[in-house]
Image (cartoon, rainbow, N blue to C red; front, top):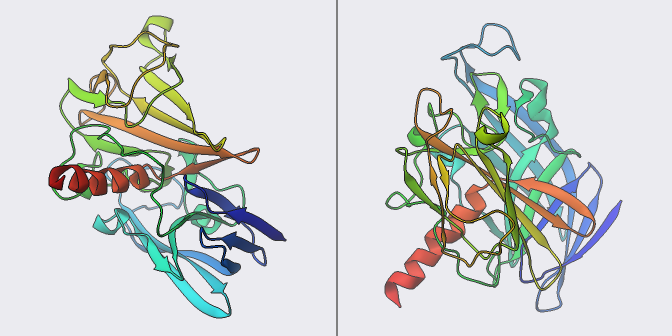
Length: 293
């Protein structure tokens, strides 16, 4: 199937099957043709006794890959989860930034019982013209950023990165960051509408927040934060970027006080989940910009 997309001032989230060819028009007008020719995944190490059966303390690390033919040249993109390499740099290929987010083969050995995260097609990625940011505004830190980069050791038990193997067997549908109860959570960009879609007050086991923003190009970004102990802004009220939204890390946190982050993109009539690390990646770059300004 041929898929046509044009670079815009927000990144493009896309899912593809084998044989699909993405025609991606750069800001310069040049067209890049990306054909998916292979997608695979394999366990590199595990302590799980029975595949797809969670066990407290179990560890599963894996790699996954996607091979593309891009304008006649073949590129093999490989990712490793869960490790420090989970917080990765996008590939810079022929004027594009490419984030390889997931392949469906991961679910040959992991389940989807710890949050939605399975791609609808065989490969999920995000792509952007490398001369453009992932969005047209500087991003405010979502929470206090550790120096230099997020650490995999601080992703709950060192496993709950995006798509990490929770208890060795279930792909993690979010990014966990360990920090003390009361840690400030800010809005990384302006929020048009928001609510606690789960709350202790309603009888749920957690306070889970969701906010949305529609960009001028029509794309809508949806973000979530879970384990909030206090929400400072009334629900369904627009919020400016950088506003103190809530205190994180305080409700139903398990063995480590932490907050759970989720990111999804709605564009062109579809919705695609993506690694929240992509937002944090831009936040780190933007922090460098503001510190040197």
